[in-house]
Length: 125
Ligand SMILES: [Zn+2]
Image 1 (cartoon, protein in one colour):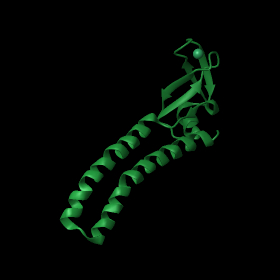
Image 2 (cartoon, protein in one colour):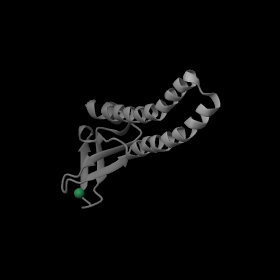
Image 3 (cartoon, helix red, strand yellow):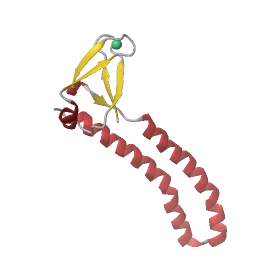
Image 4 (cartoon, helix red, strand yellow):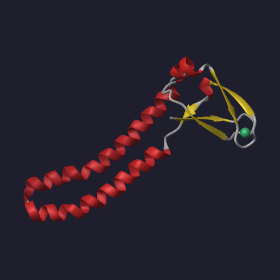
């Protein structure tokens, strides 16, 4: 996942990729410090593991929104067809259940992402 650190000189964020999910893992596999060169001011920073942090992923947010935005109209389009074909209270309940799917997927993706971020950020080494 993407990890971030703030450049000591210009305070801008430097981002890099890491396979580690917690700071403890990071120390085990990559050491207690991380050397990063700032892309803006070219300052060579050496960060302690506790200065690195994770952020909620824009990618997860985009995927979650896409599922929500694409899934909901598809359902709204197919629901009347389904209702005309099968009708009845039972199928209405089934449809209501299906309507929740994009919402559930959306909130699950965001929840998983928040857990990932918190797991890293709240576990100090
Ligand atoms: Zn900088």
